[in-house]
Image (cartoon, rainbow, N blue to C red):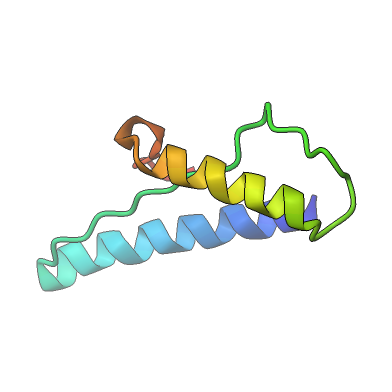
Length: 75
């Protein structure tokens, strides 16, 4: 739970920095975020299993290729 909270706070901070950059420097900044789908269930529950990491990389590549997978609104 602490990791999720930390991740959400980091994402909010990133979105805030992007907004400040737009306002202060007229920067053309976009923040796009993806996350592992909640439906994903690892084949092996232990951390850092090579098979699970490769599966996550494949999912990330597929989602990254589809702009509809990206979130552009802050959490």
